[in-house]
Length: 349
Picture 1 (tube, rainbow, N blue to C red):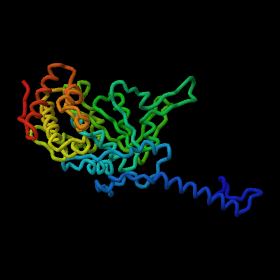
Picture 2 (spheres, rainbow, N blue to C red; picture 1 turned 30 degrees about the vertical axis):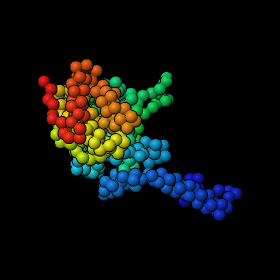
Picture 3 (tube, one colour; picture 1 turned 45 degrees about the vertical axis):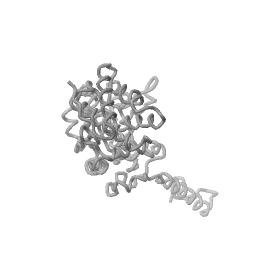
Picture 4 (spheres, one colour; picture 1 turned 90 degrees about the vertical axis):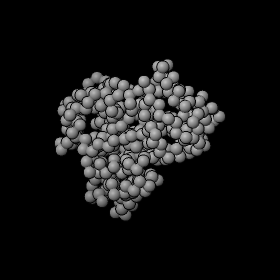
C-alpha cells in the first residue's frame, strides 16, 4: 500500500514505521466499515427476504447512516407479502409504485423496507408547495461559489431509496425532469448548475406512493404518462378490515399496542371496518388507519371511556363538518353497543 500517495518511503522514515502507519490506517478503515455494518434489523429474518439483498454489501458513508431507519414497527398484512413484493420489485427493476387509500401503511412499509435493506431513505412529499429548488438544489448567496444539493440530487450522489409520497400531486415539470433518471439513461441534468450531469447511484432505488382519487384528495391528478410507464411494478394496498370482513390480526395488534382487552379491541376494529366501508363508497372523507385506532385504544387504556375517547381520536379526525361527525358518531355508538359482535353495516344516504 502506498504511503501518503507515494510508493517510496519518505526521507527520515523507516520501512517499519511506514508499515506500522499503513497497518494503523487499514485498521481504522476496517473498524469504521465494521461499525457501519453493525446494525441489522431484527425483522430481516422474519420477512425472509435474504435473497433480495438491495445493498449488496455496499457500505454507505458515515453521514448517510443516520438516514437509515431504525426500530420500525412490524408491518401486519393479510397474507399479501407486501415487504417481499416491494423488495423483489426493487431488486429486479430498481423502482416501484404503491397505491391505496390513506392509512393503509404505504409510508410505514417503505421505512420498514429501507431498514431491512440497510438503505438511506430520502423522503419527499410531492405537494404543490415543494419547489424545484428543494428537489434539485440552488446557489446560496451571490455568485456561483456555494451550491447546495436538493433532495433528489443528494440521493443521486449517495444512493438509497428515494421515496416520493403523494406522487400524483407532483408538478408536471418535476415529473418530466425525473424521466431520464428512471430509464436506461440513468442520470439527471442540472440545468441550474451549468447542465451538470449527475449519474444515478448504482444502489439508488425509487418508490412512489399515491392515493386513488377521492373527495379527500382533491389535489390529485393523473400521473404523467411517461413517468407512469417507468414504474415497472404496481402494488395495491388496502385496509386489513373493511365492512363485514374483520381481520383477527388487526384485533391482536390493537390489543397489544393499545393496551385494551380483546373485547374492546374487537369493538374498535368493527368501528374502523364500517367507517372504511363508508369511506370507500365516497360517503365520508376519511377512514381511520391502524394508528388512529391505536391512539383511541391508548386513551381507553388510560381510563377514558370508549365513546369519549372516540370523540378525540376518531370522530373529530374524520371531518370538521358537524353533519359528518354526527354520522361517524352514530356508527361508533352502534358498533360499541353491539359489544364484541359485528354491528350491521350502516350505509349513509
